Picture (cartoon, rainbow, N blue to C red):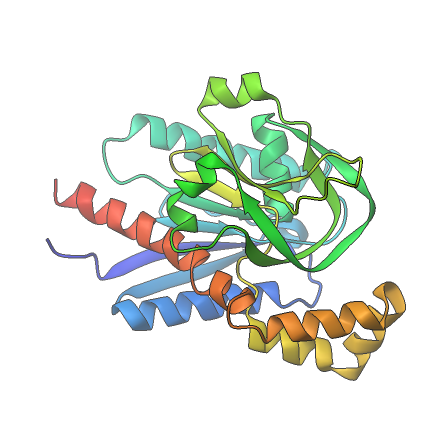
Length: 278
């Protein structure tokens, strides 16, 4: 079977023009993947929040980024357009006999998707989650293709003021969705564990954490004097030092970075290949 030599990738930028590491990390993963697998990943970026840009249906793979601010639906026009885009992809995947469209939702995008599919609540946290944290797989997560090769728990970069909680199990069952992972277990804390990953359907999956975070780049970023002082001011020196140490641990962020989004790309590209060769 011949593998497709060109895969069209739409990268949805939800950072609202703010300087960030997320987009750079996603670009790096796509570039490395294409080079490793000898596939031309033809990527185009869309500024969703500032310019209201959204991709059409002519792409094979969609990756929707994290972003700043509140993810709770507030009536912005770009939110309506974003949900229309998800709906169009859903309908396309239900109706086409050809290759399906695969989507990965990251952090802010994940929280939007949770609200679109009505599978849980998005609420403000009591305090900011910032750092490297263990992520615990649930049974469905242990069967999830994008988690292939990961340990349980695995470690991920988390940076958020909001959380996904109170899953609607009836709704999850109704649409065939499954919860993949939750945040670190803390039996002594009387708060519900936040949901860290959901497969919404066969072609759409998302995580609360940042699977694109690359350890060397993040480490350099956090060691810049301005960023170091910002983290120390907001979270303390011990948090900053802990993040630097964990970013340099090859079994933590480096491992997550090299597995989750590459696994997602493997799954989407192989599915297209199999459909084209059926």
